[in-house]
Image (tube, rainbow, N blue to C red; front, side, top):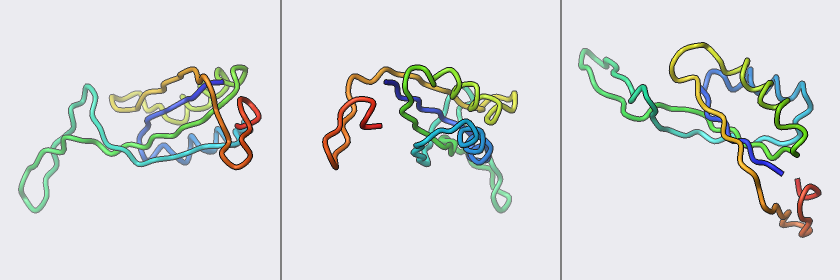
Length: 112
């Protein structure tokens, strides 16, 4: 079992979701997050005053696929989120030791 966390631009969410639904993804958790990477935030002008925005708003989507679906999910996320510019985001794939469904105490793949 794996966990895929992807951090993307907010305006990319619908396209990424459509790609994932088309490929048959069965579960997706989405959170609004803030952070910065190499771009170190940006400056904006509000009512004639320039100010610095240190944390950039992003979306984090989390999926729990089986091992055989990871590559296909990565292939679905990338074209939906890619603009070719700095700030497109990242995808993190980690291995899960255990997953438990609280309702009926299913373990492993059956809990997903």
